Image (cartoon, one colour):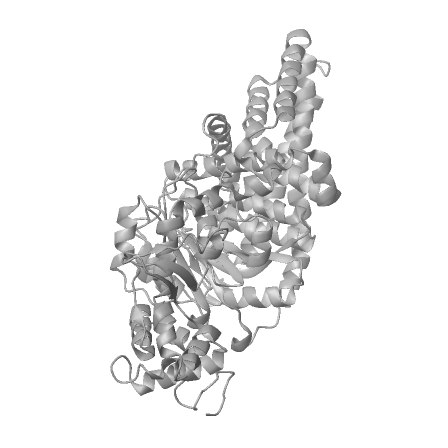
Length: 639
């Protein structure tokens, strides 16, 4: 037989890995089409057939077993052969295609779900006259899904322990699990005592000094926004020089991790959005990650006719019950060299995976992650969603691209992160105890010598339309930023050495400074408001209410608002959301809501630092038809 496209035994029509399906399970036209796509994509023909949904995984492997004269097993009554697996890491078992098992009758055998080169070798071996009896004694055929289910059923506790404790075990200084260090507790207690003593002994001087210090921090945050507004202009020009796209044969296998909890209502919309991605289906490995207790979402997923590129992973109960723990658990089952994260309500640009793959191919060995740009499909619903959309444009279309241009650490967003899997595993994955695992991971990557790039491709999300929903989500975000700041400031000199002066400044301004500025913002507003009402702006300079201190606060607020509005103005222009610019005038009031969330976050951090406050999705006025009619141009929503 001739060879074509690197597929051994290809006869120009139907590849031998799928030829035995002809007649009963698939017609020759479908098999020939799968074989042609396999050659075009540089993929395995059986994966084309299964992942495109033309033949189910179960049908294929049952037919393969019959073709080879081997038994097929769903492994329902089997158990892992622990004696043969002694010393094998649970993560290796999760990803294996061949696992030693003991069947219901106590017989030891090898459960095999062959694919790729292993499948070709098995078919070739079975053709030898002396191989049949030997193979029948040793092998049973099963599906990859059955192997994964067996690994979870038998090693779920160990996999959960790895997901929860790997970072704490390998790099305890990077884990939020241990909370504040003794030095940090003593430092905070000492600062509180010093402040109390100052207020008791020299109240006016202490308040004035505290005012100046906080004003300085607020000014640094404002200056960083102004600097970002200038830097992003160069990044916009650089983004126009997008990396050359990869040919379909060169595209890698891509794993999408999609953690879901109480998302039954939006699941069909999510599946439709992921199926719309423009990427070879044979190279897509989509993991829908469900919690064992979430029966509604599990039932909703079971009702969907999911094609073979989807795989449902059920995470066993364990604490903490957080998104990063679920991601770590599912990462052990990933097949791709690239990994992306999406949330339940996401609607990614269909070309995003291709753009990300090209960015990695051209980004050098230290490029560990690319961050997609986030926006909202319901930005115009009400005042709150408009302000939220403005904030997102300032962050993802202006600030993060500016940090990319300056090669500074980027605090990642919680979705549309794309990683090199080997680097992600090298740095320990996500911190399951950090409720903003994304921001933490961005700085951890920077400390290990890697960098993050901003990807000129948008993913649309659902903005919170109700204040309680928004407040809960923002409280969790700010609590996670508090966690992230204290984790990375456990050893300040080491952080300075690993991040460099500018990176260290970014940590203190973007993470610590942003939280602190949210806490002090209402105090400045109240102080200035009180002075205006009392007419004391021109009081005696020697007093606490002196004009110089009031002028400093007014100047700080003015510059802070102006810098933030400038950054948002630029971001709205880049994102094509110029119609929202008229709503910028309301930004100071939105900041007061952020301040409320910051105080809630501080209280929540003290009481329950690892609690994950769930954001409910599925806005009642949003309809699937609207999402599916989204029109994309150059990675952006075209309005």
